[in-house]
Amino acid sequence: MSLHPCDAVTFFCVVNELNINTSFSAGRLTIYLSGELDQHEAQQTSTCIAELLDEYLPRDCVLDLSALSFMDSSGIAVIVKANRHIRTIGGRLWVENPARQALRVIDAAGLDRMIPVESGRVGGYP
Amino acid sequence: MKEQNYIKMEFPSKSSNEAFARAAAAAFAAQLDPTMEELGDIKTAVSEAVTNAIVHAYPDEIGRVSMRLRILEGQVLEISVKDWGCGIEDVEKAMQPLYTTGGEDRSGMGFTIIGSFMDKLSVRSRPGKGTTVVMRRRICPRIGKR
Picture 1 (cartoon, each protein chain N blue to C red):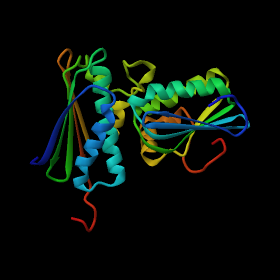
Picture 2 (picture 1 turned 90 degrees about the vertical axis):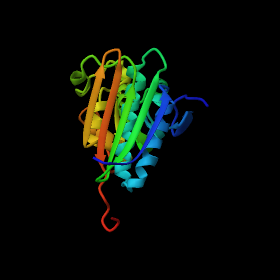
Picture 3 (picture 1 turned 120 degrees about the vertical axis):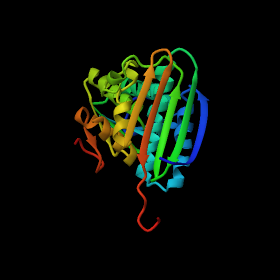
């Protein structure tokens, strides 16, 4: 499937047990991660996110973790890496709707001190 | 503390075994009737410890990783993850937040997360000999069930 930027386009790919879906609209790229994100999936996930950021060059990027059933500190590294990448292209990134287990990991790692984490509502920059 | 049940397993240090290890730990812990949150904490701690063994103990080879789970009296789950890999030079330093030798693919938060999710954490290691991580978590009895 093509990755060319356009409004309301949806891209889908599978990285083993982790699914990545995206939607792009009005300069905002939303990346939906679902399944389990551990070290086994981390490198491929980071590569996939970097390719999406380079392709869409979004102003805003949302990582939607509402369907992520498991994440460990490897997921923290993926998010930090994605944030570092989007900064190099002049955009900004935040995390939205982390599922309960992922939110506990985010809290324990103190990720919300580095990257905005919106855990209660959908849409809008926190 | 008196042991009431246990399992032991050994697997090669392949990252594809991380999901299996945490699922096995969760299945064993289920007999303590944990909440979903407790189960999530156990899976996370196991994933961190097993990942450490896979990534850091055997950076250039596939080695052995052993995991033992015990149920001790008082609803306590004990998890030991052992490897015979390169070991840790300075355990105290390795347990500091953000410390990692794994480059940008690692967050350096593994031990910090284990420490906040488990009641007890101990790490014993000798360079060239391997590392043993022992974690304990008491599972709260549910009211009306015990």
